[in-house]
Length: 174
Image (cartoon, rainbow, N blue to C red):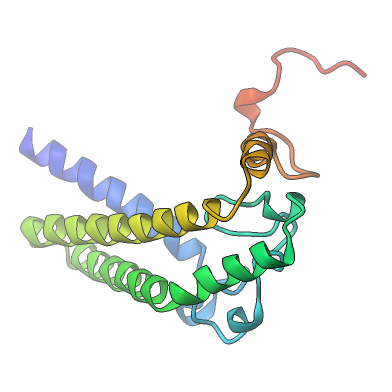
């Protein structure tokens, strides 16, 4: 029973590692839009991060008709938290690397579990930091903008299909 549980944990960890490894570019560099701490990120505001704008689950910000004051407040919030986000993200990357090394060594089950717990803690700390930023950004919005943001967040980005689980069953009408 213990061996089966250990194999299941190792399998899940391996799946996590392979998924995260695929998201990285050459030599471990991450693809996608610039993130906190990157040279390109320093000059970007909330409206300049892709087709729907902001990260942190606030992708509808560009659709809210932000005032210049709100735009400046959001940019200031991001800049204030840049070091914290860079630090928490680096901790996640380091914990992920340590877990990968423990799994690849594979001889010490306790070391794998400790590394997995450390990664979980690092991910949790990063999520808490992101949640604090989201709350600070939401505090700059009007009630009407918050309502519109709630409506927008449930819509898939333009040009994207809903997940298959949400598609109607049966033949599609033509």
